[in-house]
Length: 107
Image (cartoon, rainbow, N blue to C red; front, side, top):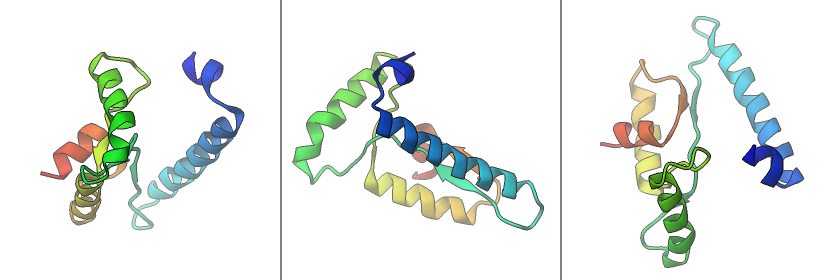
């Protein structure tokens, strides 16, 4: 509902293109030995030393805490990069990784 009603046209096109690429990566990952797709779908990415990003980040954190279904919790750039690096060394990690996965992998 929200995506269809409130998302601007350019964003819809961007998301369609992004999902098409993700789909091709996942398809390629089904061929043994070809690739292991690891796709990070983070919401907002922020750094605590960039104060200007905190108002938007806070709004997303609140929306996620309230349980809004279309709002993922933001992640720090440090946690995301740590999760990405760690995922490369863990053969069991593949597919879509969301903020909960970033939390788990960045520890």
